[in-house]
Image 1 (cartoon, helix red, strand yellow):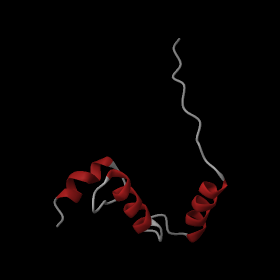
Image 2 (cartoon, rainbow, N blue to C red):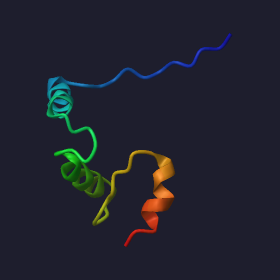
Image 3 (tube, rainbow, N blue to C red):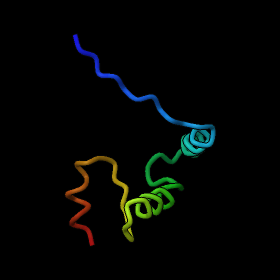
Length: 66
């Protein structure tokens, strides 16, 4: 039998703190950190804007919004 090894999470205390802040905020959708996340992703990939969606199946719908 073959086993697929999964990578271990590379988290530090600041990552855990950030996740807990979101969880304790009670806003898991359209939360307070989403704009920061979108800006960080846009910067990382070198584009002006980025949009976070809940799943890959939301992408076709998001593409139609202007």
